[in-house]
Image 1 (cartoon, rainbow, N blue to C red):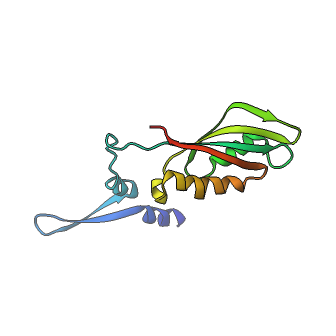
Image 2 (image 1 turned 60 degrees about the vertical axis):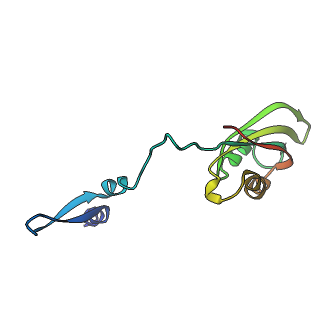
Image 3 (image 1 turned 90 degrees about the vertical axis):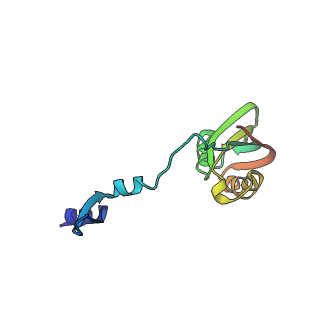
Length: 143
């Protein structure tokens, strides 16, 4: 019974009028229907990639280790790549790190890149346990 119901849910019917005024019902799967709405030309579309560079402090005693912290930053909507770079300074309590955060897909949020960094990225980073955002050094377009 459940299979019959699922089949009805995932199948759609279209009605065609034949030349002799007969009606014919054609069954098409949901896959066939949604494919008609997708237009992937690809050649004209270029996704803008941005990079924000921060100086952050990662605590050794609060939150996860550095890799877990980078993974949490990657979970922020729009963030694609998180990379520490340069020299880091370490003390007993934690580490000061220069961090590159690449992001894209902000057009849907209707924010400029700087506003995205200020209102979304930086605010979300502040909620990560053991991570302190010391300074935003720059926001730049990569492509």
